[in-house]
Image (cartoon, rainbow, N blue to C red; front, side, top):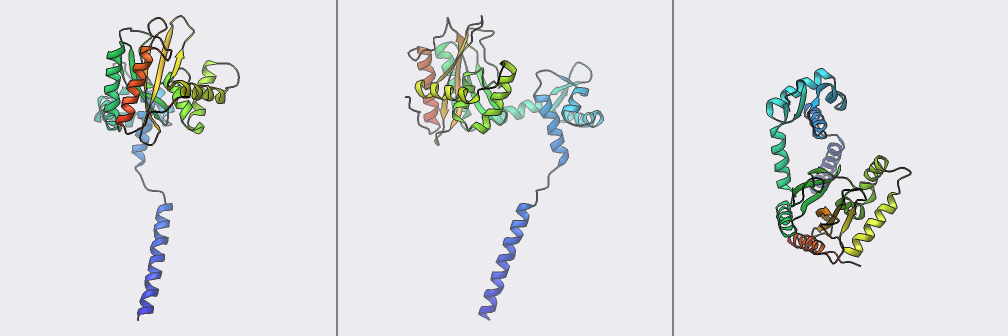
Length: 281
């Protein structure tokens, strides 16, 4: 009886293993209507103003009638809102609440949020914290400095080429995550073939030498910005801290008090997240 029992157990184990493999290969069922509703919300969140129904529908790959039906429900639960302009829609208060909750759940966000406020108070310049998403770098929280207008940061997605924080992600992240974003912005801002490798290498060299990156605009605004990475325990860039001002009001050389304040804040946040401050060449 013992050999027979052993044989049955072996067959049963094999069958369970095969069943598990089949279940893993089979796509998990979902709710299609939820995924469709998210397509509409995704269209709305990419616009800075209310959108007309006729413009939302094609971007969400839906008919106008289907889009209208989904919007009725989204408005009812607060994820979307009808604008004062007839037939136009924007994100609703419930979407804002979800966004705020998502930010608060980001590991370490409260630490860097406090550093942004402290950095602004110490320098009197606009300060912000940025993190990486599948869509690119996104500014999570900002505090405006004494200078207003063109020198303020904004929350939401920020450019790779035109921001000091974007240069850090270009320098530190795998090329497959950043190349398409750099190429897209290059086509929008410059002529000729994008030189992505040179941009990435220059950013990496600046970050290694100084411990921070910088942006200096050549236009009449005189805008300058500097950013430093905040690392986690694994040495990966979790967030970036940034300062912005003008060439006349904010020096960005390594000996500058603004640079020292930025690096001190980034170092403090890095240590709080269990990371080690990166060395410089």
